[in-house]
Image 1 (cartoon, helix red, strand yellow):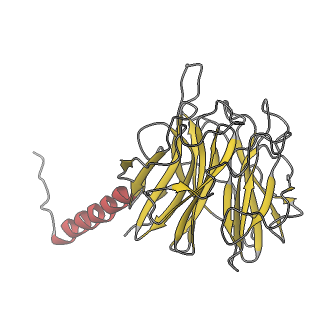
Image 2 (image 1 turned 120 degrees about the vertical axis):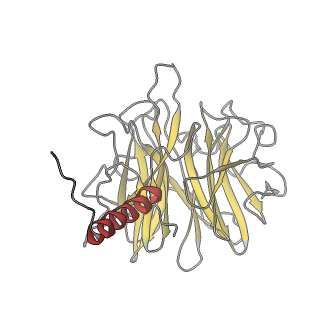
Length: 324
C-alpha cells in the first residue's frame, strides 16, 4: 500500500511562490517575430507612452507605409497615415520603387520623417505621429532626387539629433548588391535645408541602412552589409569622434548575423532605442520561404556594451519586456 504524505504549509507556500514567480516572467517575455505580418526597415518613435513603428510593407514595399502602434511590443494596432504615398511622392526623376525605409524623429515639438519613394528621399512633417503628414518642402519636391548623386542609390535615410540639438541626415546604398555609399549632411533648423554640402563618409564593410547612435561621447555609425535577399545580410558598426567620422570598425563585427540554426536569417536594417537605461535593437529578418521574393518580419532584442564601450554580439532570442 502506498501512503501519500500530506502537503505541508511550507510545501504549499513554495509551490505558490514558484508559480507566481514563473508566470510573470513568461508574460513579460517578448518573442520574435514580435508581430504577424511582413514588414522591413523599421523605425520607431515614442510619444506620450505609446510607441509608433513605421516600416516597409513586404514584398518590396507598397503604396503606403506599414504603421504599428504599441505600448508593450506584444499587442499591436495597425494604423494608416495619409503621407507618404507612391502617388504623392513622385517626381519627374522618380524610379519605380515603392514606399521604403522611413526614419521618424521628434524635433522642436514636431515629427519629421525621411523616407525613400521611387529611389528618392522625401521629407515629411507632422504635429502628431499619426498625422496628418505633409511634405516638409513647400514646393512638394523630393529632398534628394534619384539623380543627385549618381553613384549612390539614394534610399535608407536616417535622421540623428545630437546632444546639442544639431540634426544630421545619413543615407545611401549601392547598386546590384555592391558598392554601397553612405552620405551624410548637417541639417538646418528647418530640417530640410542642408548646412553644408553632403559628403561621402562610407565606413568599412558598408552596404546600406545607416543608423547613428551616440553614447558617452562616442558616435556609433551602424549599418547593414551583404545582400538583403539572403543569409549574408548582417548588422555592423564603426565608431568615431564626430558625426562624420573618421571611422574605426567595431571589434565584435558583425554584431548581428544569421544564426547557426538559421532561425534568424539575414537580419538587418535596424533602429536602436533606449528604455529604462537599456538599449534595444529593432530589425527585420527573412521569413523562411520558397517564393522568388523576400518576405521579412520584425524582431526585437537587447543591445549591450562591454566596459570599453564596444557593442557586444547579439544572440537573437527576444527580450524581457521593459513595460511594468
